[in-house]
Image (cartoon, rainbow, N blue to C red):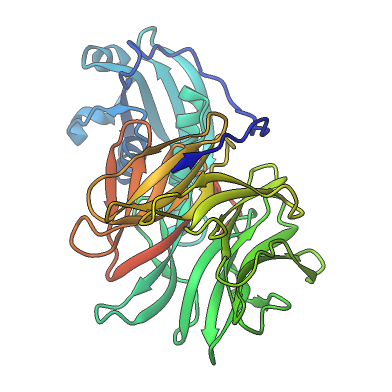
Length: 423
């Protein structure tokens, strides 16, 4: 394997600042307690789990009676139990009031009232997830990932295709997206979080459709009604879609104008048996990473968004090695992909600035990674539990958790942060 550094790529801005709550020694997660008034125990439980899944805090689990507020909040007691921060939940008209306390001083550092009921159990849960994400941002300045969803392809127990589904990032609220019947392939999110695109196979043609999650209405992407069209990626501003088209002459990457629904053009042309596929945009939309076989084995490449300046990032010189399924992190600093090497398939991360690659999995067969909005967590398919399931990995601590589905799951795609109007 040869690594070629990609220099001078712009990075996405880091937003938010910390509240000043003490974290303790570097590498030690701060303790946090979530205390709630009577009637909010289920809300508290969801927020506790969200904060645990953020991998940024040590949630101090206490009996309901110890975290149920009946009078003035006794922050000092929670400090003695190791809490650096305390979240207080109180009922408010149409929602809840949230207060964040610095346990060291007992002072309120952030507070607000947030709505909960948005017309359905799934959306009520999503409103709670947004509260969790706000707490994460209040304390760390980083994005939370609770108010997100994951698209994936589901297979029935007999191995046949069951379509594209979505599920909340905590593994709850699974909902069908694609129509029953037929064969579906890779899916992706529109940056608005309201629409998704995926490939639908019918009569040996792979057609890309753009579907509204709110209404179910679908639009067929022009010029994708012949050959096999798949592995779509949508530019960060939502104006363009890059995708792979495969035919008798091999596979190449094309781009279509989504705003005008026209003007398809080819971005790669290498020749037969030198396939180019799996595009992923940089967060500023100026570059596209992709997989190419032009060097003999599938390796990781990059080009300008207009198709110029194509160069290798990870050149696979080993006859048994290959790179596949890249995804560019939202902060622009990393590209995650899976590699086949020495008989194993593992998730790897390329540091864009340094040009270094590190494996972040080692157990089972792991593939098809997708970044969370925080550029820290990755969802991927793994066989480590005995069958194909979705797993989430914290790339900083190596903590992992399984998202259980009723059948085999693969080809996940993590959503952007979902706003309050998102279905």
